[in-house]
Length: 66
Image (cartoon, rainbow, N blue to C red; front, side, top):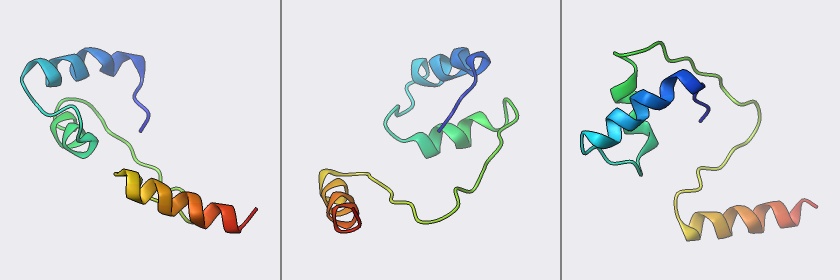
């Protein structure tokens, strides 16, 4: 995720309102009615690293391709 500097006050508001700061997708859902949100699809493979186990799995995959 990339957020421009002008979005920082909105992120602070999101957290101050008691929303979960550990779920970036929910931030985007909250953010888009308040400011323009743009997306970009990363070409190629990507891995969603959401836990220690998925990080370890990604490390194993990338280690095989060195």
